[in-house]
Image (cartoon, rainbow, N blue to C red; front, side, top):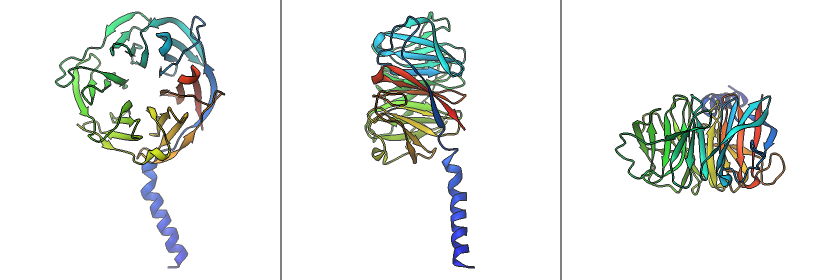
Length: 299
C-alpha cells in the first residue's frame, strides 16, 4: 500500500471516530430585533433573565422590578400585558402550562404566576432531605415540568417534580469556583457553568455528582454567566465580561465565538442569560445595554 493510501486511511478512521462526538455544530444566527421597551412603553433596565417558547417571551426586567411579556410572531416580539411586579427578578422560566416561574433576587423565592399574570404562589420544595436553607442562584424547568434549582446554600442542584416534590439532588463538585447557571437537555442531563474557573460540568440523568466536561476555557471566555443547549447539542455560554457567546461541542471542546463588546445590533455589553426556543430562536439578555436581542437560526 502506498504512503498516500495509508495516510488517507488514517484520516478517514479519525473522522469516523471523532465525528459523532462533535454534534451538528453551532447554528448560523441572524439578527432580527433588539427589544428596548415593555407594554407601558417603559424602557427595560438591566434585564438579567429571559425565558421563551416559540410564541412567548418573558423578560426579567431586573432594575424595574417586573416581568415583561412579549408575543413573538413573524420574527418580531411585541409587548403584551400584564406586567408582573416582582422585586429584582434574576431568572425566569415557563412551564408546559404557560405558568411563569421567576426567581426573586431580593428574598430568594421562586414565585409562580398564572398565564394571565396573576400570582399563584411560591415554589416550596416538599420532602427534601438536603435543602435546609434554600438559596437559589438560577433554575430551569424541563419539558416534563421538573424543576432544577441551583442551590448555593447546600452546594447542589435540587430536582423537584411539577408539584414541588423532592426527586433527587446532585452535589456540586469539590474543586470549583462560583456556579452561575445550569441547563438541562431532553434526556435529563444537567450542565453547570462555573463563572470564576471558566468551566462546564456535567451530570447524567441518574448521577449523584458532577464531572468536568470542559477544561482550559479561560483562553476563550472571561466570566460566563449563562448556559443553554440547542437541539443539536451545541453548548452556548454567555460570556458576561467578554460580551460574546462562546460555543462548545457536546464533549466540551471549543467551537468558536460570536459577537463582541459594543452597543450596536449584534454587540453586547455585560450580557447575562439566554434562551433558545424549540424552533431555534435565540433571545439574549443584553444587560448593560438594557435590551434583549433576538436572533433566528438559519441553515
